[in-house]
Image 1: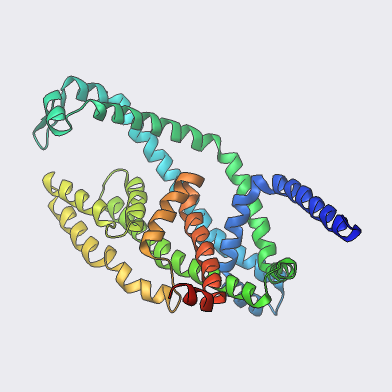
Image 2 (image 1 turned 90 degrees about the vertical axis):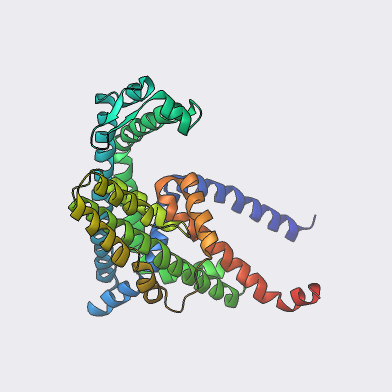
Length: 352
């Protein structure tokens, strides 16, 4: 081995070991850093506006943009999360207090308004197996563990938010210099790196704004409407409506329509009619009205990729995965776009 090869090998070994050490140090904060990067790209134009307003003072522009994100995203998210935990806790306590599981098991549960009595024969005729009861018990245990873990992880969540905003401040302020430094280190051509960054930002922005923002808006309106009409667990149902909105060919109609039917069956006619009218002509039409304005000329992910990446992200990263999953796929699609562009002639030759 020549001296130059030895020097190169030794240098790469040092990079590998130090890189692994850096990864282990950053590992607890990778999720917060990734979210900070996503938010810095989505709100970059607002940062530029704030910076221009403050006379090109980047520190004030970055601080103002972080404050805006705190007010319009984080605080409402914390408030809604607390409502969901509270409603889930109340629902679990209600099931325990009324001995719902035992009554269904013993065939004693009666719904007076609908004059329906649930018996073991009903359950077996509909479900045909005792696994239904096991599922109900597992669901009750899941709700209890969810409430417990939510309270236990509050301090950790607050610390991660602090890390996220600390990183977000500097990503706004020094983001261009950081990206430029990474481009200098990367062995890719500058042209390829610019295409990768632009394509990634374009796909992420179109996907998040065109799918997740609309889903959050539809879920919020559904929850607020149910709350205004006096439906219990409105916040929890609003979150369910968000997830239905993320699924292609479904939507929040699978939440507000059953709720409207139940209200009509219970004799609350005007509430059910209002829910049907508002759900049909406002909540369900938001997608068609806002998507072209939010997405613009950007090209987002295919609905199938959004569906898989959203629920895959939820499975891997938890609740925040609904945001991270599509972004990871957006990066993958952006890399494939560069590959297709750079090897266009070769691919055409191979495909003959």
